[in-house]
Length: 119
Image (cartoon, rainbow, N blue to C red; front, side, top):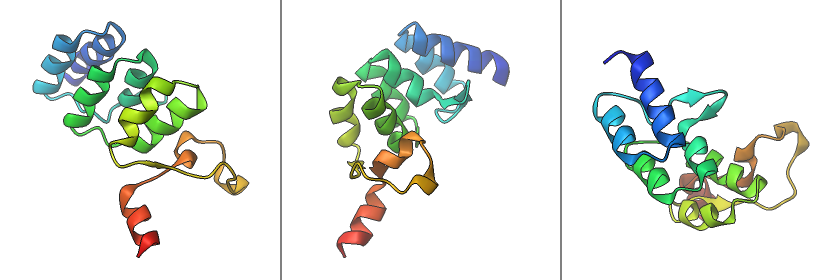
């Protein structure tokens, strides 16, 4: 299947909350890290508030968990915060250095960063 068809099936599957379509697209080679309209597909799944979809994408290698957690925090999607936190993402303090901008990842630290800070 061509990448354009896979991308369409993946994005539509996430927004339609069609787990079978998303699994099919991932099986045929869709990338769980693809970006659509400026956001990783994982963020789209977080926005739909479908935990099973989020877990499906993460299990297939979606790596923007920190960004997804930041998105959930910023947009008040509370039911998505805890499951993402279980992926090893730790929320940052509210006060952030303005030089880093307003990107959602400002709210989280990857697990390896946290571990190095604790050492």
